[in-house]
Image 1 (cartoon, rainbow, N blue to C red):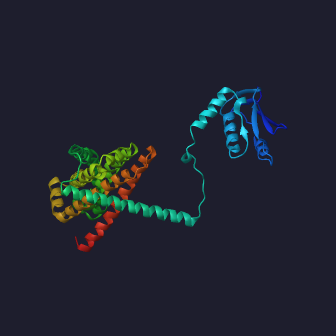
Image 2: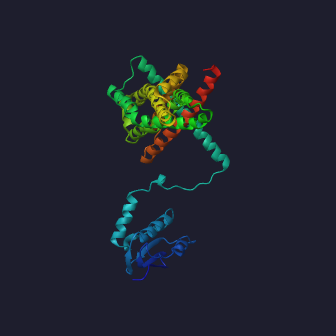
Image 3: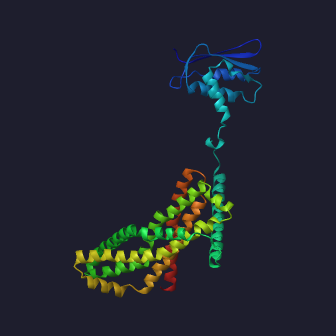
Length: 376
């Protein structure tokens, strides 16, 4: 059988007969229908279109695409299309395509906008995001007030589960990262200190750096990528499954039931994890000092004790407290803002991690400036 061919002829009764012959398969070169469309758009368009498919061989979606295009082209015109001359299988598929309407959002039209329009859209999105964030913080504040008055409702079993996830379950990764950070700080510091024969001050470097900043920062970043992302993914999945709508319908505040226990658990556990990270970092510095520079364990311990002041520890604990609020609040916020699709859950998770890390860096800069201004 030859490739598909298309011929048409208009009768005196203003009926257009379309002769479809050959193989109409998408793998072959389908004939052009431009001349047919011009004939339909003529000054005197045909009143009726019929088909002659007696010479039609094989067909697949290539023929269906042509027919759907023809149908769309004739919509809004005074032209009637009679599909009775087509094979039964083609008619059934056309009927099926008419039953299921096309999703408008599935077709993405490329629209070019001006620079000023794009800037105004970005500004509007930023302003909308700020308002959403402030509204969410307000809801969380109201939930904490209800908690202090004994009116907040959430399950203690959920709180204990989140507490375990934010604390004990995170110990392995916190141990590994903090120990390696202590090793790195000790190695980097030893390169300079060895030039002056002051290797004993490795203990000072590692102890102060870990307790004052690095311990809290590393724990905050770890928890942002581990637990904060999990908060966003779980709440986002509940948003997709309409479970949050079900909570609202039942008269239960999603912020109290889902967000409040997560913020409390993360805020309580992050300072404890920071203390543990400080200890593991100092242990990493101890390994480098003892094995690489012959410093005794008692000497390292005594030097660390003399150099690390309580002010450094309190600064690190305060930073970790702030980081716990940032990570948990951001993770829950992105989860509540999640759309109603599977891809939206991934976007919410990514946004939660990125926003949390940016928030941690900004908060660290602010705390450092405040401590310098206060002389701490």
